[in-house]
Image 1 (cartoon, rainbow, N blue to C red):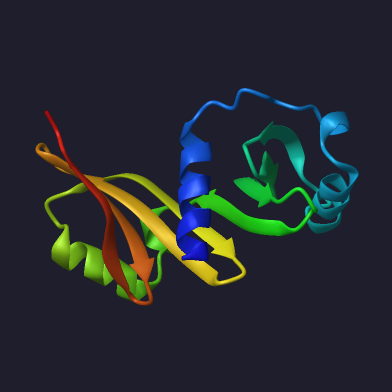
Image 2 (image 1 turned 60 degrees about the vertical axis):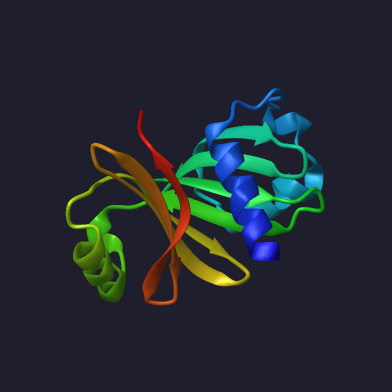
Length: 147
């Protein structure tokens, strides 16, 4: 359940505009210290705050990364957009077997204390489906019909 709540919080915060965009001098010292220790060569850092997490969007080793911290400075999760060929082979195969008539509109990796999982949005002319990796397979996370 904790993982589900974290995933929902991250997804909502990724797509919602934050009302409060703090500069790095407004982020708690514990969060800044943790971030600077973990991502020493981060560039173009932009901070946002949600109701219960700090969100840092930045580039790191040539990749766009988003890190989520609680107010105590604990790294809750890290996300990054990836290409479909970066998925584990079993997930690629399962996706091609079940959703071969869909195109991919979004794909990202989530790493947290529970491990690494993947969220992918696939679409066709009639529907949009968000899938979450569960082990080496996919489960439907959200499904909607297009109007």
